[in-house]
Length: 115
Length: 112
Image (cartoon, rainbow over all chains, first blue to last red):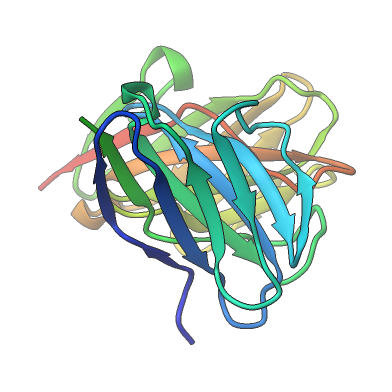
């Protein structure tokens, strides 16, 4: 049973380009969470999605960032017109169901570098 | 060896020693806590969790202690091994929210 798969593992973009980060949750999981991690810091929540729905996007920047989790296919975190400050590791987690005691499993992350 | 969370982000211990990693949380409404281990270049890995109605929970070589009075959480690792070297994060959840909130993390370095 494969774990949470994220791709690409490393992504380099020039300022002003678009970055698309993909996350395939564990088999049977329909809840996806995206986090951002800056060097030497903890993980900051960005957005929580279920299939075809955004449940909580309180951690998403108001501009340039968007996320989706379509009925078929992976969840996508999209960053338009990237800036150097977007350079970070982006992690996706998935869970089988929602609930306070539900364990979330993390992927290996995508390391975005903006040059 | 013992850390004090945010004020001592790096903990160095000798192989075989017991390690104690501390975490102070701020939300008194948090009712579920998780410890994660993150190795270099990898995603966080679940270690152990504890509900707020408990004050201690044991796993394999790890024990989590919860003191709700002072809003303090600790992770004890027995007989620390070089493979335990990683950054350890505590995370908390609040009833009604399904999203774990992460602390800053403590780097554990185990010397052979």
